[in-house]
Amino acid sequence: MKAEEKKKFLIIGGGLAGITLSHRLLNRNQQVTLIDDGLNASTKIAAGMVNPIVFRRTTLSWRATEFLTYSWDFYKSLEKQLNTTFAEPFLIKRIFPSVNEKEEWQKKQLLPAYQNHLVNIESANMEQNFGIVRSGYFVHAEKFYIENLRHFEKLGILIKETFDDNSFSVLESTYRGIKYDHIVFCCGYRVSETSYFEDCQVKPTKGQTLVIKHQELPEAASLHLKCFVFPMGNKTFRIGATYEWENSTLNPTQEARNTLLDHLQHITKTPPEIISQPVGIRPTTMDRRPVLGSHATYKTVHVFNGLGAKGYLLAPKMAQEMVGYLLDNIPIPKDYNLIRYQTDDELNRK
Image (cartoon, rainbow, N blue to C red; front, side, top):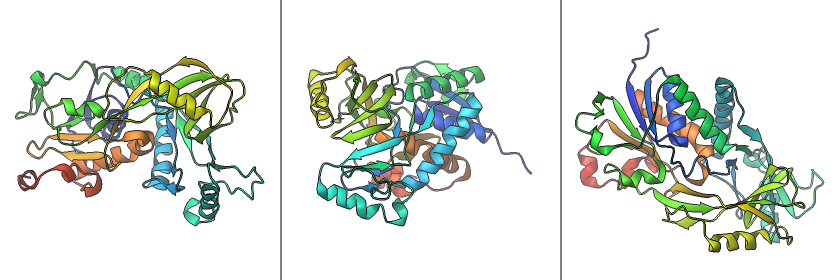
């Protein structure tokens, strides 16, 4: 069997997108250089919950069943490679805010598409005011980020610096004098700071959370009603999260703290002890779809971005599709292809 041609890739941004894409390329025996400046405000800040269900309407999120299996297998395989653990199965409990939502859950739990995801309320002989998602899990986000960058550093492929546009020649496809076959921008909400993908419409969505101590909250499952209450062990919990559209400031605010505490009262009336107020910035899109594709003019320059609030669910499969596009010329579907943002003139230049 003919060995696969090795190409040189420069990946800009060592967050979730850059990490998963780098692993996929390395698995295809490609030469990877990853640039990361350590200023990550999404991947390592995230709660890391992987939930296939969209609450309120009790619907499956986009391609949820496919993504769940694929992402779980990816993370467990990566744990073996890195000799660590960061992904764990976890129950997700939805407290019903209304009789209508409970009735919708009861209908959905009987459908074949939902039976691997929703615990049947009646058959489990549970209380009737909540439902449980059985197929969720969580990723220790900060550990995932740190362990993967440590791994890439050991491989000698990690450059710890901020990408310097002045050292990049887009016409020659070189960075600091080194020529690359492909350059992929995986820099989350900061993609708008580049001069190549200003129009890809990835927006910064600020999310604030609280880390609290609470003696009465249960630790066997995460709770969801108006907010999420995620157990971190030793009676410590993460409460979240706010959605502050087109906001890239990283300062915690009293307004967000008050909002989260108000939401928490729907779950418990006992005041918590507040430990900290982490802040992150999600790279989101209006249509809630990722952005994969190539620059309209510069054929070696690409983007892998817009993973949003469900990044840990989407990233492994999306990274595989990005690699299929770059190495095997497999088209990216239009609903998450960069071309959906490009003008007719740009598309005609392709």
